[in-house]
Length: 247
Image (cartoon, rainbow, N blue to C red; front, side, top):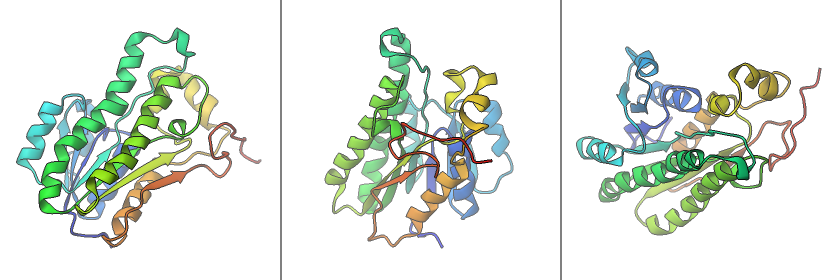
């Protein structure tokens, strides 16, 4: 059973992959979920699903998000939206790619959390989740900016717990290795994603990450899971080596 002092949730990057799996998992537990995403066509796939309200939104627009928190009491925030716009050596990265990854992966979750916390503090309850990455804990090739954005999230989570101690609000970072998602679709040619990353390798599935969210929420309020690090069994923690599936 979930800890039902939490009744509502907001999930960013909700239209596919990890975000969509989290939306469906929470809604299936009776949580009212606000599913945020930019793609209206994909948001319409939530039509008719009980406990889900889809909202077209850009996570970089924190003024719109401010209005959302003023009009709704939201107990759970899942900062999931993220981009990997390129896998290039840093000296070859476009400035626009630097801005996009820092704006969406790092700045947007900070702004969103800033808008969520005052009401949570007033109510004395809340749980804020951040989807990090193993690239934020250890160097990955061609991932300088993406890694920096996720490393910023990791340190932010640790520091945020200091500011929130005593307020009854939990903060959990989920740090996965390789997950089978659409994250790489802008950084790798679409017809090469499966063959390069997934076909011969084990991967974590989005539903596995959603289950970790539920696990943290099921724990007593006095228990705060600060960080889940989760990897495919065939991937070395740290991310620098992953072996092919055994035949």
